[in-house]
Every structure is written in C-alpha cells, then in structure tokens.
Length: 179
Ligand code: AR6
Image 1 (tube, rainbow, N blue to C red):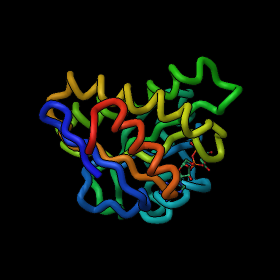
Image 2 (tube, helix red, strand yellow; image 1 turned 180 degrees about the horizontal axis):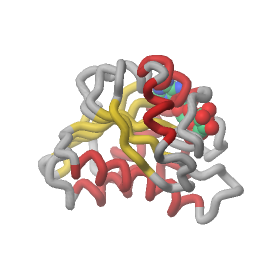
Image 3 (cartoon, rainbow, N blue to C red; image 1 turned 60 degrees about the vertical axis):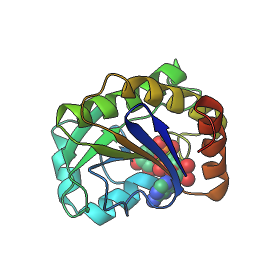
Image 4 (tube, rainbow, N blue to C red; image 1 turned 60 degrees about the horizontal axis):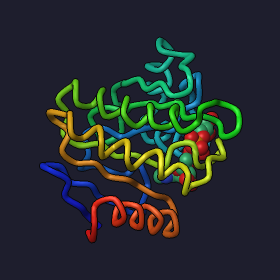
C-alpha cells in the first residue's frame, strides 16, 4: 500500500528486509557492536556475508539512537544503515532515541544521494518496544524528515507480520489519509 507525501512516496509491505532488491539503502536493527544477531540483524548479515560485520568494526560500539552507514556487500542494495534502537524500559528517552534512528538513517542516505530506503520496525523485537508506541515515534519522524531531504523520495516500511503491517497502514491512513 502506498501514500504520496509531497514529492515522496511511502509504502508499507509485509516481507523480509534482506530481500528488497529495488531499494538503495536497507536499515539494520543493529546491536552496539554491529555484529550479527537474531531477527533483522541476523537476516541482513547472513545475506551480506562476513564483510558486513568487518565493516562495522571500525564504528563499534555505537550508542542508542545512533545510525552509521556501511557498504551492503552481497546484499542486493547499495548501502546498509545500522541503527542501534533503544532497549525498551532501559534506554531513555526511548521515543527520542528511536526517532533519532529514523531521522539519522534518512539523513545518511540523503547525504550520499540515495533515493530509496527500507526500514524494519526497529526495537520492536529483541529490544521489546511495543509496536504501537514504536510506530508513533517512527512514522511522524519520517514524515517530518522527508520535508527537508533532497534525494530520498521513496520510503518502504517492511514488516515481518501481517498484523504489524496493518498497524502501520492504520497510522499512515491517520497521518496522511487513504493510501
Ligand atoms: N525482515 C523484516 N523484519 C524482521 C525480520 C526480517 N528478516 N526479522 C525480524 N523482523 P529485531 P530489535 C522484525 O529483534 O528489537 C538483534 O539480535 C521483528 O519481528 O530484529 O531492534 C540485534 O543483534 C521485529 O518486529 O530488532 C540486536 O541485539 C522487528 O523486525 C537486537 O536484536 C525488529 O526485531 C535488536 O533488537
């Protein structure tokens, strides 16, 4: 499902963040060491190959809310932005830190001249962030950031489950209108 916002397009799909070949930049739900892990990080590191963890070493450790960019190696994308989302109930203020992941990722992608980016639902797996709360940090931040970007004109939210996808669709319908 898609929405238009100014000159940009936002899309919500159910899928695997490691299988988005038409997207320039994919966002990783990273750990502080930028090593492989479970969930999103596991899927991206498996598909990218061991060079992804090697490339991350020079940036580690990253802080909650921080985003850094590396090559995508064997992934079908041009770059990966690694965001360390907040651990819910520990890293505060969690909404500010989570929003900073989204705005930081968009800024990094835009600075390199990339035009498309795909986000998973950062922090909502192992880091325990309730999905609805995470959506309220993620979606308005992306909508606001898009206004000041030069190159990024396509944002895809890739959700693992159908119910997560439906929750994103509800929020975008609320924020923008029918898709
Ligand atoms: N594609 C899209 N979404 C996915 C995928 C996938 N392949 N796999 C899981 N999800 P998580 P976090 C969903 O745990 O909460 C890692 O081990 C998942 O259902 O990947 O930020 C790292 O190493 C959930 O909704 O990220 C860190 O230590 C969402 O993506 C830690 O977990 C995020 O789940 C990061 O935890």
